[in-house]
Amino acid sequence: MINSILVICIGNICRSPMAEGLLRRAFPEKTVRSAGIGALIGHPADPFSIQIMQEQGIDISAHRAQSLASWMVNEANLILTMDLEQKRHVETQYSSSKGKVFRLGEFEKYDIPDPYRHDLAVFRQSYQLIAEGVAVMSKKIVHIS
Image (cartoon, rainbow, N blue to C red; front, side, top):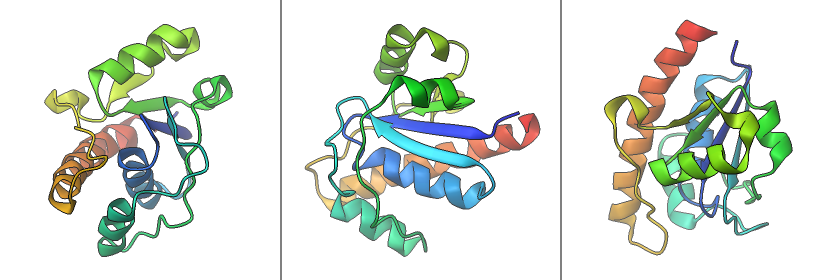
């Protein structure tokens, strides 16, 4: 049973807040959090991430970046990263994560590039990959839950 989903990226201001917003909309009954391996603690989501999510009818303007913590890893039933390097980092740093960490693009075998400090077009490309990953992962979550 998946009741708690944790989404991880680096700064927790671009990719993971967007994925968190999409997953919250898909699963309002579940706990969905995001965090960063190198989080810009306390910073709001990037303005481009906020804009793209507003276009999708999702408000992430209240988001504030937080650093990945062991309690989050322990509490989560499913942990989603943006790339293989982040997946390996989480599995190495947190032994309790074994078997529950997947890339968001795991089943299509792709990473989601970091749009940080790039233009809106790059953010849109990352968003498209995130949205595709969330759509595929959501189908898997429904079958497991």
